Image (cartoon, rainbow, N blue to C red; front, side, top):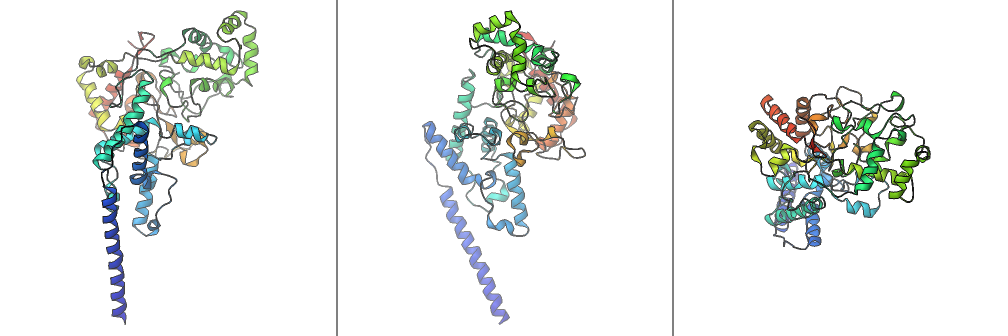
Length: 468
């Protein structure tokens, strides 16, 4: 009886294994069939999303439920870990940066952050996804030649259109680009915005202006760990640079502002920054300035308001781009613009896939990433409100410790670094990012080269060098 039972079990296991093999073979044939490569943009997008759903969503879509076999001891824990890591690198349903009140139209418009597309293209190129432990079990989940072609076409389509909106033509095949020499702006409104940018009347006690925390001579920052506001109060995150902020997908470390005008509206009413009670308080002071009022209403007939004041400041901040760095000249073909050491640094920058996050003309600002992606950045210290990152805005606990990727342009001028302003030295910041974002240990020679390369990103403001 026992022998018969054992035989039944063996036969049952054999049947299950056979069915699994047959099922995988069928899946392999179905999944690996060549796909037609469309040419129309809408069809390319539809085909690309279908590929992502078929071959990436199992580990990269938070809406998907885990398969039943995650309950199995051993393999189940590995699967849960892989899915967790997959979602941290890229959740296909990544709309947290839009906030809980986002409309479906807004979600659709920002369906895939631009920075994620660059990461997708790199994965398509080097074949790192899916990992071997996944495709060895799920046959046919590797990308076919036609699928790689479709995904690359989609990335190029979206990325190229965004770049073209800034006057960067034919740039879809590259991750980083020179900053345009100029972008469109309204000169008269920008001149008005410049006056307001330096106006301390936006603060409760008339001591703090936009320029107080975003000084031109300090790389568009204040070179402090935390900015000092009215009454000596301090914030809990480092002030990001205002230079090239126009290229950000959203503003602030937590992305709570959609654009520059919305960002400009934040500090005046922030109790630890400019500390005004409301915009009526600010407008009442400006109304007493007859000359300013006359000039302002000539541009904005509706007069002073939160929208018009912040709109003027934002128009000025559009001008704060810093083209003409030595790296820009190198990208434009002037190969002797960088030293041999700096070129080695740029090569290391690419080899370690830094451009998957630090992409575009500003080299950053296009996605949100976890500060503790590869190692525990927060180990050994108390987690503060400033460490909440995107979660402070999205109210999604999964977004905690996740921040908008900082801009690298002019980084040699903007110490201290990181969202918490904890690192005063650029080389040590590079070492930190190698550990927490790349998951690698670089040699001192490589760190020196990377640091030297970052020094080539300092550009010009209004046609004048930001540094000697």
